[in-house]
Image 1 (tube, rainbow, N blue to C red):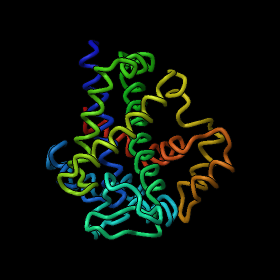
Image 2: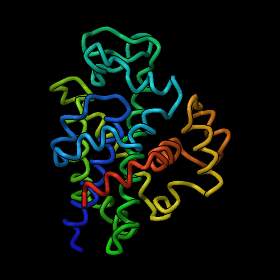
Image 3: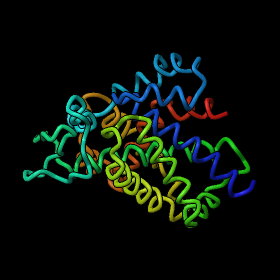
Length: 249
């Protein structure tokens, strides 16, 4: 398989998976999903068991962070943190209960985790694709740029950030690409993305099941896992990876 085709296949799977995670976590991404997949798949995705499971995961605090400024013009990342460290909304107001750092970390973690689960699913489904190939692609500026563009497209289409917020989109895309690159410095990182069987079960029971834990609590309970791995386990457990792979195929 050529590098170009490899990047295109992984980019498609990762983008769909990242977009689906945003959609089922409460963002208005249905128009974007319609552009990425046949229209007759839209109702199937919307009402699928996987999407419903994903909607019910995570603590209330995490859900509130994800939906910050939803009715106030979305989060203006380019504006930076307010004087109190909170996110600034598109309409200029702030949401004191959600910090800028927490919002950026949470959203970028979820997107990176979704992409990694998508990549892992493709690796398992296609014998022509190996973790080593993915590591090579992400060490290549051209390959990294391909995924950066795909992530930018996902962010724009999902309507996650304010309309025409190019600086905010670039900031978030850079954050996600950086986390993907760090996670893919070694093929072992992708292979161990979901932890051990014991860790996986523990995270599902305590972090991916309502009322859920905070990331810090989950990491204390399951040492050795990163925040991205925690979210990746939830995405995997929801069944969304398999649904997205079916669409890509």
